[in-house]
Image (cartoon, rainbow, N blue to C red; front, side):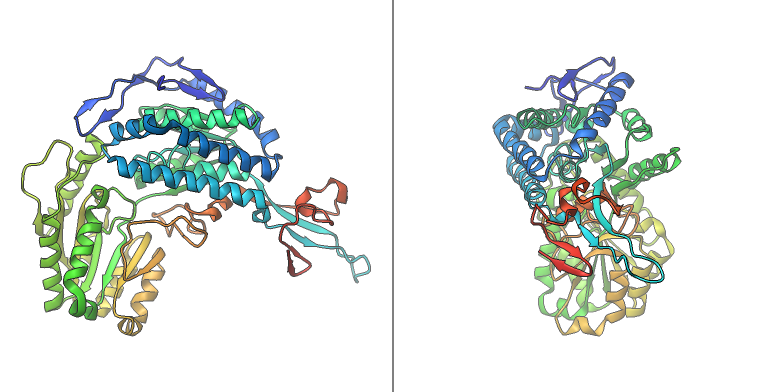
Length: 524
């Protein structure tokens, strides 16, 4: 049941005077539940509880953390139709999407549970002493990853489950041994509260310390600012806009003790279409990309917002084909009136730039909060000279850039900001003739795709969901998959420490039986 209250550890609280409601974008009305924004006192209580919980939680075994994560997954599934219906009423997204995202969320939790139960993720490294080494003895050194401390996670507007309350950031932080305080997204506060209740139930059933998880409501930026500035918070996870992520990064850097902000932000996800691919299968690629651009109303961080090709008869034909195909797709609803409004504003800003030509714009009447898809095109020279055209338009929009030649194509890629993905559409033999273009693309993205679409992020150990700034704030890490746990830990060494006082992962006898790096050799 939705109460509208904050979860401060295992207690519900509604001390603040500021309230708000979520919005149903399909019905174009507010939902009925009233949500209470967290007060300064409630924020301090949540952080204090998290700090106290960390003292115990950081030492809890991998088996117990695994039981906790599995219990969260079980409790989320137990919410059943109430969760799905609330999700749909707060986003306008269909039931199938809600159930699919719930499945992904549960899979992520169970993946991290399996990871910490096995235990080798801590990267235990042992270099034993050499007492008779000259000119100086070698000490015994042992290294392990340890958790950072309380983590603040910001819920994402476009993924109420997989990137929010119990999403990837939360699952990874809890797996690492870090208590989590979620700053719930105001657009799906009811969904967030239901998931928070599942996490609290799981914590109580598995005897986790009170404060291992809290969920705070907020209608604006104030709660988030106070959390990031709080001295007991040690790291931040964020999925959202460049503006929001950059603001958090700056706040964290200005603290007396700066802390890391792992933000996954904007991306136009450039798609490079090489000539031969168009000759062989241009029409099918046009249909495929019309579907990818409009998937989820274009509200994915991996939406293909930029298509690059070399001017030719075939490329002109592709532009006509993708423009025709996208107009045959029925428009769909955006997550919130504010997001729909921002889409229209940013779309108009892009097409108002000099020499931009609109080749497809859905003109029929649509329901309120539904997005009208659009394709626009521009010459490579104008694109290079106008950085406004490089910016993301969050929604079903893509800019097609017609490059003069391979050199201009390479130059354009080199001038792009950092991106989550880059895609190459090509014949297998043809791509080998463009090494400079491929090298330029690799330098700008976190994941490169061959003959596919960027929409769709597989959850597996080999996935990199991140990239050079501003697609993310630290390109060395991924926000998806089990390796994302590395964001919430730091390396720590023991020197000449008594064996019986070492953590089990580093003891001589290896009681956990994990894989370790011992004196230069990997041992299992």
